[in-house]
Image (tube, rainbow over all chains, first blue to last red; front, side, top):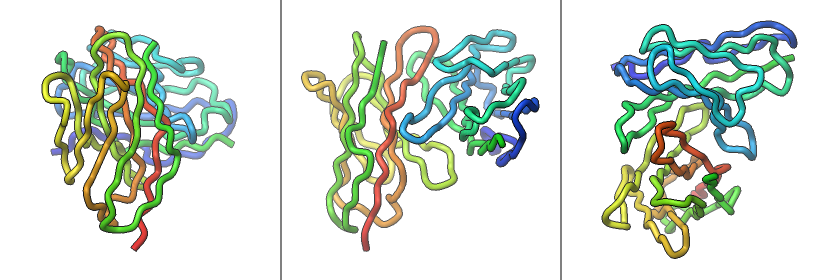
Length: 113
Length: 114
């Protein structure tokens, strides 16, 4: 009953470095999502994926790259981290039905120095 | 574009008191509405959701919410708050389009006094 997991849970990096956040779900959900959570903004959608090899931008995609070669995995890469990308990142998944519910992972807390 | 407003950033109630968290949304069609709760250091857990039908929705942990189309609101209520309810609460609206995107409010932090 693993559900949806994220790794690492905490990460400290430096400006300019590449960072990859991992997300894995065991439900075979078709949809997966990446959000960032910042004080005063709630959660904002970065990217989402409707199926393997299908991804699309959300509200705040700049500076991020995603891929989805397998249904269960949806990594998020910061190609050149900036301080403004310091945030808590949440991955979510849903089964894609019309009345779906999104299920969230525990989050990754990222600090960019 | 859809949007969600949670007017109360922080609410403090005493244990045993009733609770109402406000949520107003903007969406052109019939909305899909959700309330999520986030305990410190945790991910988001779904409390309840509304898609259609009965406008009073029951959720987990004794919470309920009422959809009022005329007021564009989906307020969350609980008759008697427990100390374990202290958390951050997020209202969200979902689109019926293919993107399945949720738009979240900025959250309401609930503090429960003993």
